[in-house]
Length: 184
Image (cartoon, rainbow, N blue to C red; front, side):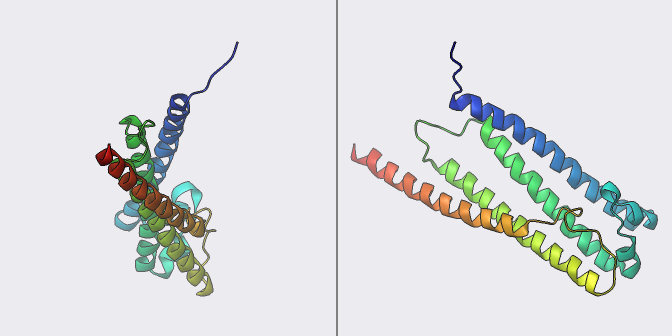
């Protein structure tokens, strides 16, 4: 008995994986946003036990504005990751991946959207990590950037650049396919 794994099976598996990751990053983004609002509006003690036990109370005590900016960056990065996986889910569920004609405008738009989001995640992650380093130089005790979910900004930037290159290749493929369709 031979088991055949088709492209359709792989895409279904990726859809399930994308849903799992999307739920996780959405919960994380919601946690960051909720804790930021709770700490700023209701209870400053919330900074001592921020999302997943991170202690941001030294930053809050140093300056509330800096605390707000740092948590805003964390929220923004988490939201952008959630949007990225939402786009993946949307693309896989709407079956816009046509394997008979892979070069289409929807796919180019999708890849470019992912590239810009990855590039944005990389930029804000790097910015947030540099901000954390600056706080540390100022004597503020900060959690590691891994715990703040700001690590890997360079990887996200690299992924954004690679996706832009891939999108340009697909864009050229769409142009060639359109020329061939008009020729025939």
